[in-house]
Length: 217
Length: 118
Image (cartoon, one colour):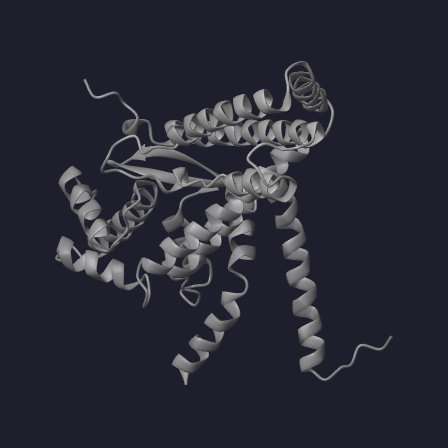
């Protein structure tokens, strides 16, 4: 016998009670539990939904869902690291290397046509605005429903700029135009790579779970 | 005695779960989690029981490595994740099976105390 919507809703409640807070993980676990329960109840017609559920949960082993949640987070981090590297590599291969060269030329021109102070100040403002814009794309679509796949941490993006600054200048503004140029270039590249990754992640989330992104009328 | 046998079997099984998953996905195109555990159980006549606590970490790891991808569909009042091999996953599936077979042959030799003569 197939489970109805109330049963499925009860499974979501069950999974949430067992500390699985992320919707994408919940969906997977609910389906698995539901399939097991349906199979068990088919074999044993007198089995109740609750008993079938407890039996199904028991087969997840000693740690229940905890291990699965932990491993999924680790696997996701690995996946995003891989994405980061492959996107970076793309930008140094044909044809995207043209874009990289263009960004460098713009950074160079910007510093040479203005001055170090102006260039760095403008860059920092634009850069932070860009970063905030990117991070906002990863916000949960609904307050109460979180997606694990949206938990992307742009690698070292803050660390980069401030360490870079600290090693080359005692003040806020770099003393050398080449430091400024390379800072603007690297900063822009970082922003571009992270923007592309975030767009991909967001697109995947919207494709797989469109029900979370529907605008509430 | 039988229980001890089952436990040893499960210990061997632990290291081969990703190979199993890759092979099954290669044969069946796309499968969902429960389908994988059920198929393994059926094919081994009940001897191999992959716990869900072992299956999903293996599946998610294969996904993070780019060997497996998924789609989501609505089935029977709920959403279901279907897993399938990527292009590199199909390549790895072939390699892993070959590796496993050569490991098995080597083990057999060693256990029979037939040293490999170079």
